[in-house]
Amino acid sequence: MLLPYLNKGLTEAGCDEAGRGCLAGSVFAAAVILPVTFRNEQLNDSKQLTEKQRYSLRTIIEKEAITWAVGIVTAQEIDKINILNASILAMHRAVDQLNVRPQHLLIDGNRFKPYQDIPHTTVVKGDGKYLSIAAASVLAKTYRDDYMQSLHKQFPIYNWDHNKGYPTKKHRAAIAQYGTTPFHRMTFNLLGDSQLSLSL
Image (cartoon, rainbow, N blue to C red; front, side):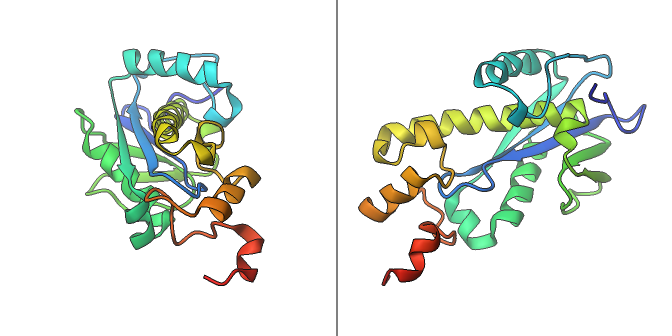
């Protein structure tokens, strides 16, 4: 069972990101404040759920959360500030949009930069431990998947409707054959091991 909170009596926002390891597309993060009474047997780390479960849970989370928001950092921004900083910035942008100010932030992972004067706790694999982080993981993942589906319509050769920008063989083969798009992260190793033998 996932835990409803870390600090009883505080308004806590769970934060998580999606798309950190992708070769293309923005990184998305979500921040969610759930009621202390919120319970859902199915809610878990979004990676442990089916696509159908994630979208079903998204509807429940958006309806029952006290407040929620999604923050986005583009591929161009990722190339400027690196993916770790971009993931943290996406979380900051999500928290920016919450219409209730949290008293504490629960962050999935082990790295974070303080957001204003709000205390935070980083939790490794937090999306499998706390309901609010799990809820944030579901929102970040589903909103990013929607975005990659829309990009797929513009650039169908990269298979983004299936790989969502992650480094699959097909994705890398398409980059090798057709080149990059404005949505590729140019500071990433786009071609994998084969990149070493290419003259760029």
